[in-house]
Length: 137
Image (cartoon, rainbow, N blue to C red; front, side, top):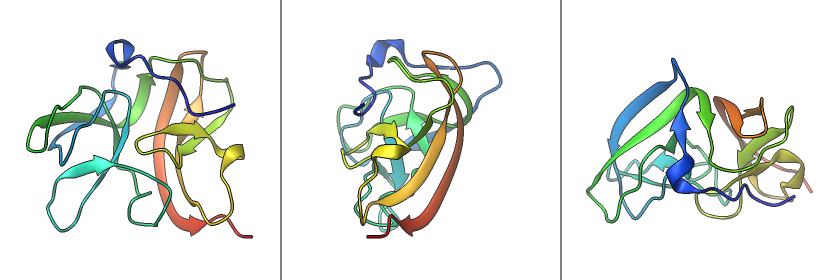
């Protein structure tokens, strides 16, 4: 199983989900994970290469075409992710910028940030936990 293949137009927040309005630091597509770049305060796509870049804060609910554009992110609750997920699977930040994939596929030295758990074939219960811990060798 690889990263979730997201159809951006099908990404939607569930009832009662927690969202936040932020500013994009680069091009972001709906359904991608983002983290806050401390130097600029802008949001960029998360990736497992460091504890900082793996510390996702949310999933983009809309797309931005350039740095400086508004972005709404889902930080907790349910999301229809616009792709197929497995019920009971733990999903994490991946080695693809902005990607979400199964935790079982994280490799040595990748930093682990849990995104949530699949609760239906298209929905994830988002409860982000940026652990700051890398997968050991």
